Length: 304
Image (cartoon, rainbow, N blue to C red; front, top):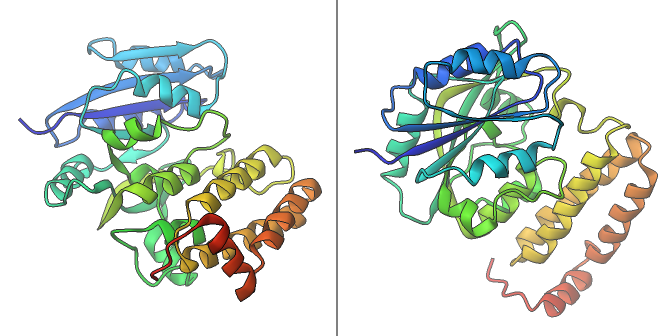
């Protein structure tokens, strides 16, 4: 029997998209799947849609009467997961039929040090029309020249390149990390930083996911002036990354990230957060003598 894959499906006001999303889970070519569904206090009838769609299936469903936030909701589902692998699936996205099979096939070719397999994705709009491709956009903007494999810690602290819903994750990774950090507003950057310090990533250069791009999504509003909680989450993750760096190259990558986030705070009138970024940038320095001081302070072993 193939390894069990736990799919943790989370809805928050996704009523319009839940049927298409769940259908894509149920129609996977992969044979051994555990489905766990949570609705995080939706006000649009999402819970009723879910109940109708799973009425003839043995599926765990938890309905929050009030919104707890994504990280807490996911961790509640994670506590129920028994699979060897885990997928974090928002119920406005769409899996293509071979998403799980291709990902698990790749895992079975990888060493146990590989904790995450991720792939390419198409972007779709509210009407499920394809409006772009993740890899093509990254290449066009010259954010990457290729999607990296292996030790990606330096790359994930420098810039965004992973399409979150494409990830299939070894459950051991979550077990070691203790799930998502529930003090944070959003989860992906923190997960990438902490997991990539200890596990390798493998990239599958195929499209197996359709990620829905909506103006109401959290990622779309991350740098809006009224979303200082998200900007603060990013700062807290950067502080974690600082203490996880092990090389000069990684510190330089973090310096690039801090400069970018500092500019975003200034553009969005988040002055207090900008000052915190400025303080961390001043500590980082960017000059050779400052990096040397950090090396001595953190007792880092620099071989790169």
